[in-house]
Structures are given as C-alpha cells and as structure tokens.
Length: 251
Image (cartoon, rainbow, N blue to C red; front, side, top):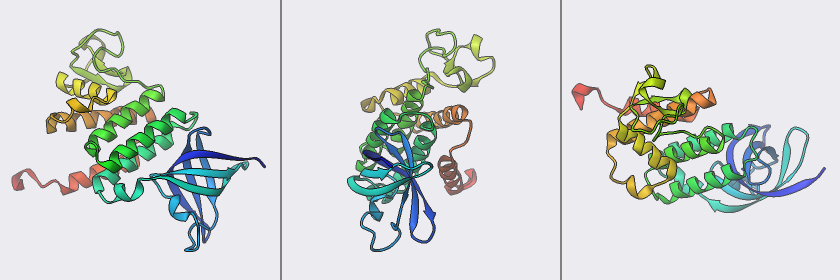
C-alpha cells in the first residue's frame, strides 16, 4: 500500500481499542483524512501528544481502504496548550474544527487547511477577540465551500444596500421586496458582518457589544442553514452562556 506525507491539522480523535485512536485530520494535499494512530494512548508513545485537537503536524501515513495508518507525526505548531488555557479560545477553536470537519466532506481541503491554521494561530496568540476570530473564520470557510454571503447588497436581486432584512436562504442581506418577512437587522450589524468576512480587524476593535452579539447570532444561523445541522460545539457554548447569565432582576 502507498504511503504519503502531508501537513495536517488535527480536528478530532476517538478511542479505538485499549491503546489506539482514530484521528481525523484536515490535510493540505489530501483533504480530510481519517487514520488509525496505533499505541498513541500508551505512555511510551513517541507521538501521541502531537495528535491532539488544534495541533498542526507533519504526518506520514499508510493509505488504506477505509482508514489510513499514521506512521509518524512531527509537530509544526503547538496551539493546543495556549488555546486550552483560555475557555473562550477553547470554545471558539472547538466550533472551528467541527465546522472544518463538516465543510470539507467533499472538498480538496487545501484552502480550508490554510484558513484553519491561520485562525488557530490567531486564537492561540490572542491577536483578536475569540468571538471575532470565530465569526470571521466561519464566514470565510462557508464562502470557500461555495456559500459566500452578501451583506452590502441584496443576495437575491443584487440591489445595493443598506438592506434591513437578513434571510439565510437568500444568501444574507435582502431588500424588502425579496425578503418577504425575513428577520429585520440594523444596517450597522450588516456592515459588521462584511468587516468580519473581509477580515478588517482594525475597524472591529471599536464595535459595540450589541452589534458583535447580533452579528454572531446571524453568523451561526447562516452556517446552520447551509450545513443543515446545528454545530454541537456552538450549541454547547451557547447553553453555557445562557446558564451563566443571571435573570434580569438580579443583574
């Protein structure tokens, strides 16, 4: 059986037997790969710690029919510890790797790989707020997967904004004629979404909490509509935020 070597991001792992793991990797040249890492749960494993979520590795694998086999893994970037040390970063990274896992089912993965590595690096270094990095990554990843959103003009007819409606099925912003009862959204929130999509970080630092929270909810709704499922990591994080928010009378 042929072997190959590639750069990969570890998306998730599952236990297999007493000492093995199944590792899901987003590689640069081979797309999404599922491979068995034998013996990595033993304390004597030479590369078990390198095959953890959020790690970037140079991996060598044997190609199999259903599952490949990891032969060697060398760390290229160890983002896991810096991300796990901050709960907001960890939440954001968990959503990002789950999204990457879903959008690259049939994608070559090269551009998605580069995008994910950059987002994890920004998270680990704390270059921007975790929520902004997550929302920006989500919009860009969906755009690469073929679901590019429109925020400054109607996603259906192309009429220039400012629009005051948001309809995921129409590609984002929508004029009153096309929306037909879609969710009403303030124009500054749509501008915020466009900045996240384009990565205009210098203009995001002064954005108010309301605009940021509103934009995040719309990003989540847009992603879930096109993926046709709820991202579990995002749902868990949202439940945690709601549980930690005191009732109005106690604020």
